[in-house]
Image 1 (tube, rainbow, N blue to C red):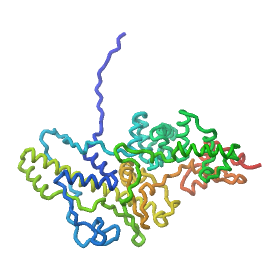
Image 2: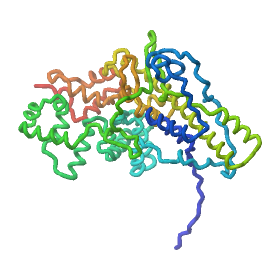
Image 3: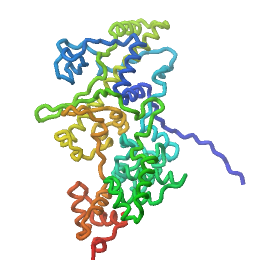
Image 4: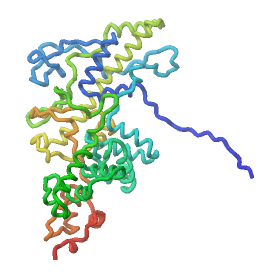
Length: 471
């Protein structure tokens, strides 16, 4: 019997990313130094752009932001020149022969810098199916600069409407990508992932897995004699394991990543310029986004008039087409700078309001749990946009301390993690009951049932309070 073959046509939808969106995304994730270099190159090559240098502070000579100096807070004695109207709609220039498509732009089509999140996501696309890739995108979007996942599997599962087991399965597959130990939920887990990968290739010191698993805090506290005594091994063996960890493992895998296009996590510049300033005014915190250059960038008014004349008269010489293209590029660049400033301001304002206890004291334990996904939901943008906007950026705090933007993001602890910490620190003579743990979780903001606490406890391999108590 022959099987009939039938040709079927299936309609699919694909999302096309415009060169304008690519340009805006590239500008958004540039550091101050990279952006300044890009602008200097553009103004050299594009006569439609103008740099105006009379917007510097009359007191200290630094660049002004909205007419005021971020460093000495002196007001400008001269009115800043009128810049191009960012809010105006971008004009559509008729370019003959392009059939409605965007013309080829060698600068915008050049390979752009790849940050850590994009590097991991590209690898995930090769090993995960379409459905699991959506989960991976959610996890990768919240990667910290150290390469650790800030979102808990429970929160991701709830946000996407999938099971926690499925999220954990995707997370386990991400943890085998490059750099080694990426997507771990803690430095301890990252070291264990690296150790197991290394153990599959060559011998590793005995007891090192047990040291990392059960004596993590002792290791951090340099309690090497206690580790040796508890495990029944010699201090030399503990020292050998410690030397192996220092030489072969790294607790912050994200810092090992170096982009082949110059946007990796290399050494810091000697002079770091803040991108955002948070200053105190009476009882409020004011956010200011700084321009990373000491000049006013605008589109040439002469070019605007000339291009308007070309469009009215409908002329089509090579020189006129080039002028229209240069004007289009200049307009896109200025508009992208406006979007960058607006996005950074929205993020920084939410962060300043959320992390007010930290700003008041600058004590790290005052940092409240906050992820990039949470910020993205509040400002109605994608989490990857927040990640790009805050990458390689620095914030000047009210105390004049300069910190990376990543420092203001604190991962939210999962309920299971809190249960593990409570059980590890409990008094052996008075072990905590499931009901007591439930009440502690409630005080910390987790509404879970007692049976859920029991499930977490059993998953951690811990017996009931009656069995854990000393008899």
